[in-house]
Image (cartoon, rainbow over all chains, first blue to last red):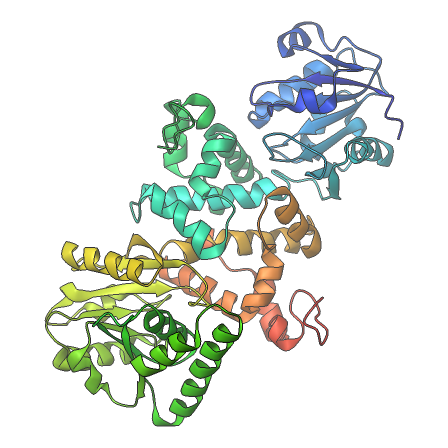
Length: 253
Length: 289
């Protein structure tokens, strides 16, 4: 793949921090999503357009539709954290065969990070190769997975967080004990509730809602506590408060 | 080193041995109780473990002699009369455990704490019908107990605050970290960890990714020490399936805990993990895939 292809970023709400720095300024143009929404995408030279919104499925569909208005047929659209299957979301874009899903959850990507690449049913091999090639050139590890809501890592982690939220909601243990138990009892790198705080409860909630919608299976229904906290604005570290309060120098409670 | 307190561990299987070793190495006089036929093997395993610790320089030869002097392996429950802590780790069968607790209540001192290491049965159901259910609680250790630092302290509706405080002190005295949890299916760890295994199985069943991909994604992307399939093969596919089923049943078929057909298939095929040479992965003589 030709990395000299021009890269454009459309960082919508919930975009992962640091992705712009990771892509590198050279040759990358960043577009305000409002600008894209009002006049369509304005950089027909772009080889890969990263749509970095981590919001609900409906929002992602509306970005895709706006993006398609002036887009070149050759541009590849890399869709971050698809909450519905890529095959379905891609239909909102003018050229569905150019849309590729991908996902990671590091706060900041670095060489060695793992990125999941998920082409949809209509996606061409060339488009998927372009996105995978981009991350490989940046030193990332990749895995090609089948496109589905949340891909692999988010889906598994969000289910763990959801269960931890249910356990807290039902009052079986304190937040501290839930986190400590998972770290010491089964070697998790972080407690699920502190993990949720660092990812953002809104992202977790949107991810679970996507899975619930896709499957129509109550297995995936988000814990009411997550919904309540998101509605109250307690979305985690970035908001200053989630399962823990984060005011002051990174104090965890 | 001896701290003057007496722990009695009933059941000398893997968990019972591990718990007894942790207690005796922390200075408790420790009595392990099991059937006469099992005693020589338990003694041998305990001696081998301590000798290995000496060889690795973790404890001194004198520590080992001290530990051996504090530990007894017996075939009857008479030690209960002097025990401060009784921890049962016998077969996971509610009726058997209830009978044991009824017997213990007759012989144990009034201030003794009666504990169960159950992972899948209700502590409340064991305490029900006892004269003093306030002194009954769960002390759930993790395998291997000599290594894993967590103990879930499980309270029932009768467990007294004083008993919980005593349990926390005891767990800390054996260099473990206690967490408090209400008696509910799977407590904290086995309940929340279901998703790690079962959601991964579902992903593989649906062909979204292969097991080695899922393991790699969760190790590299998520910083988990082991991927879910490596872990399942190590623990045993049958053991994992049994825990999943028991929690699913205990939550009255809550869909979040629903087992996967793939687990049943692997068990049917005898592909139980490392112990049978094949589970999700195949293992050679070296135990590696």
